[in-house]
Image (tube, rainbow, N blue to C red):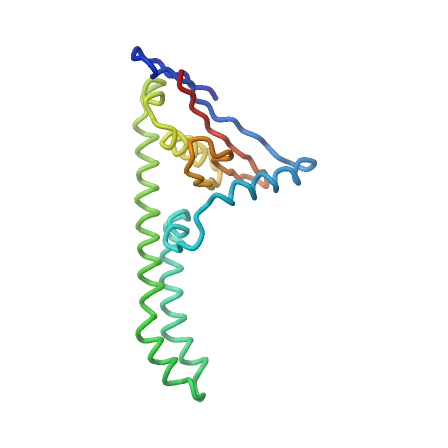
Length: 184
């Protein structure tokens, strides 16, 4: 799909397009290498941000599951040992941590999901698409594919030309999407 940006001001003309690459069978090794490269740019070590990239129910399940596991299973595991009082104290004080992290991640995921939904619904034509910045255009393309039944993974490289922007999955098929914006 190709979108032309129409404008009369200087330096505001550009072209937007999403380039799709479909990988099956023979191309699977090349796909794995490209997918690994796409994931390398992600920030690591921030659990809330990782949960925010998942559907919001995953954050709720993580939080509630973590709460019950620490609060009730940890003391049972150490029952009758020397560490039982320490485990009980830890379970009482720290069981809230995964619940809070999970709920914050779920809230961030839901807000992002609503933002992407509204972004796609607000588009009236090529002019409104052309007015978008590159990041919003990537989100718009991702939401359009979600509505077509694809599972969309946003690689989140954060650069204007970071390579693979979206990884799509549907029916055993993997599709890599690279979104571009050029200014003239």
